[in-house]
Image (cartoon, rainbow, N blue to C red; front, side):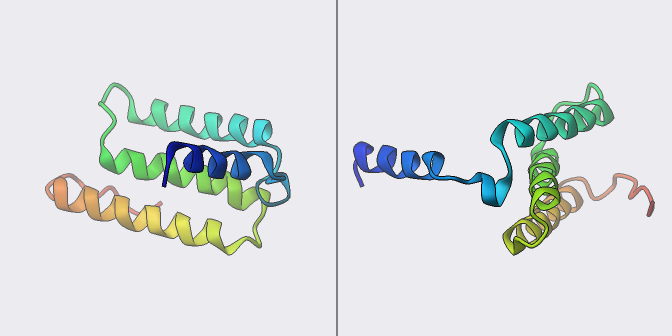
Length: 102
């Protein structure tokens, strides 16, 4: 696949009407920014790690699921990010307090 092929495929994805599936981009991005800001605040000064990335990606899928709850891909990806993040966190930092269920 050439650079031109990749750019053409990207243009096709970006230029087709994705609002029907994901809502208006600007609205979604604003909502995602709010979730990520809340995660930044909760994380505090601790540097972002691999498990945090799973949380941020889950935040993206939370917004998309709120926009289109019938789109199963959002729920599948959300579960996948949670599973990956949980595995990374518990294998990398097994001695950290588990917290508790809230």
